[in-house]
Length: 395
Image: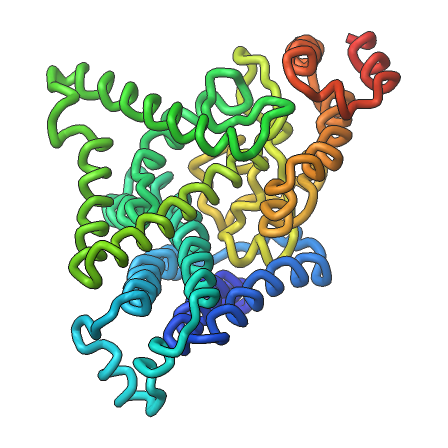
């Protein structure tokens, strides 16, 4: 059915809305930002879950549309950089004005600071959603050079090409254990996790590349190191931003890229928060928080079906199963991201879920790990002591 192909093109529509809002300038930018947020949050709330598992006869279509993310994101970031510049790089504004009849140069000059802030927020959001989420799918396809190339360039916008190394070869191996930088332990604050996961993730990626190159008799301090090449890719985008509009535009882009990187770590935080796994046990669907909210699933290439993804990371996004019996996160992705930004609310909503996970999904060995995790964390401030006692005494 053609609809099942078309639904995965929603992210193109969202990207075009973001691009058009930035170019329109002024209040249109903030209106576009709010519209994108509402489309996800209200859409997930109203439209419910998607548990369909259609069969796709032409999967190549769904790969090519992933590749479209790179030109789309490049256009959005260029438009944002142009909107913050004082000149008209490449005579872009004059060209669009002549083409459309809408004076985007005048609109840009009339844009107030508050709407420029909206430009930064929506640009970082697109770097995270169109860039990182698409790259997540592409860089799992280690057998496909084109997908890997496009995926790593998408990650370069958020200074996170190491994701293609650490996520695939580190995170998927150690997920839900204390050895995984991306798994947030119980009681952790999301803002601390952004920093901790970023630092430890970079260290992990460097160690992975160092070991890989060492086996080939090569030095880690060379262009053979994917970490070094990746950071040079990001640096080239920073330099392009400088060429477009000097130091102010360069700093603006860096802020947008870091915001996009922070979004990834917030997503990591909520996908595995509080999970524990016996390292001797293979990763199973119960070791990830899942959601089947319709809009999030369609616009994020079934990243929402995270339980199946971690049980088998090689399965293409369109073939992931919904696993409705897997542990479920609070809501759709953008709604859950928003909640995570308010730690007291997050802990209030997630602590009962974590304790319920212990009761419903944990093995006896994992119950022991969970009990220790609770003792180390601040979860005691939120938990129901009677429920906790019943759970761990049963082990």
